[in-house]
Length: 267
Image 1 (spheres, one colour):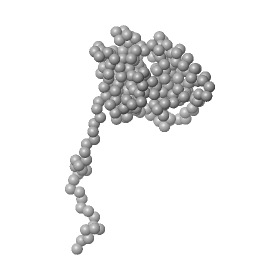
Image 2 (cartoon, helix red, strand yellow):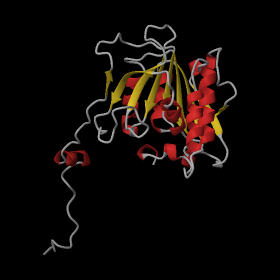
Image 3 (cartoon, helix red, strand yellow):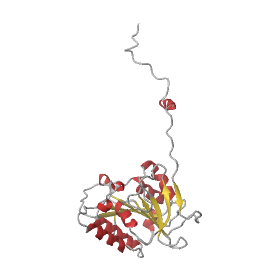
């Protein structure tokens, strides 16, 4: 007589995919959406330049620019509003869209400050909302930081580095204002997340796109570099207030390094 306790069990009558029928499907997240300050804006916006800040230094520069107008905000339903302030703050988990000129201006320039976490699974969807639907730019510049774990080589915390990646349309363009002297991102290093998705979307849409990667992730030296770079790209940009705020914070007694960047967003 067979021992039913020690004998190998018979093969399952179900295929592996059939077993998933007994598992409740994962709830799909609601789609992101954009809320505009003007209830009835003339869409789509067609800026000559769209600058997207993801890195901490670029967010700091954007936050301290005096002459910008809030156009709207990208809402991620999975990101709670708790802890956000009434006025824009570096500690907010938000994604605000600003303009540097009138929306009727032919040389409209838009700024997007991405201060909320975007998971890899949501990066492509967010990229589509920022580029190609309500906003159709002629040129896109994305500002992000080098992640040391993805960089092939040694990164010194005391040395400021910058590199770029470009779409085919940008490489073919005649003008590369402010970005000519930047080296290309070294082969063997990796870019992932939202910045990679945004650049890929630009390539797919045949839009002039450049991803600028900087190192270190924090610090006054890289903030000054980003400010100077933006000034070359947009000569009318007022970065004097950024430098003044930087000097005021760094000269305060008892202020530890990068305290102005020390918030939940950057931990």
